[in-house]
Length: 233
Image 1: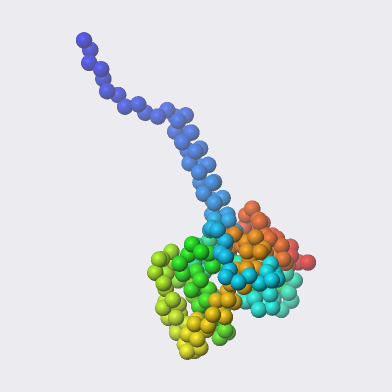
Image 2: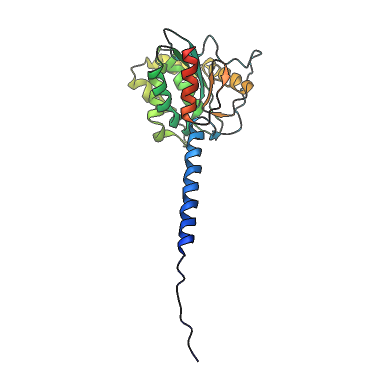
């Protein structure tokens, strides 16, 4: 009686080609996911519920909105609802900064706070940035938050002390900073942005509005093209 011979079955050439095609398709899906991540579709949870809702909630820009940069020859306004602990916002950060440099003369950039409830430090970060803004240091604190996000983000611990350290590093008046942090009006200012965003249908961050209209581009190239078109009007 012959003894069966153990043989290892090797994938055929066609099978190997099929696997290559599958991995290529997966790569396309991943790239598409990154694009969506950058334009605000990836980091979304249930929208935060503001404690007090303004009767006129739903405004894209208010007189007290934080202006990141004012264009001297303004032709368009780009508004971003953001969460400083949001990884998608951090991913979009360099792209937004590139746009600011490219369109500094014609596009005004405005930020609205939209801390998401799933992030432990999103509200403390927003309040810290607002406290810095009250001393004219909004942009500096905004940069510091995103440049250090990997050090404090996605944590279950309260990092308010870390944010106070940022304020100290920036040379802020710490007594005034502490008073602003403790003042309920500072968080109420953040909640006003949340109320507007919620009324506008914002569900994730970052979410962008260009001249009052929600931006839903399919790629970063289309995003840039829409800004370019608005800036050229």
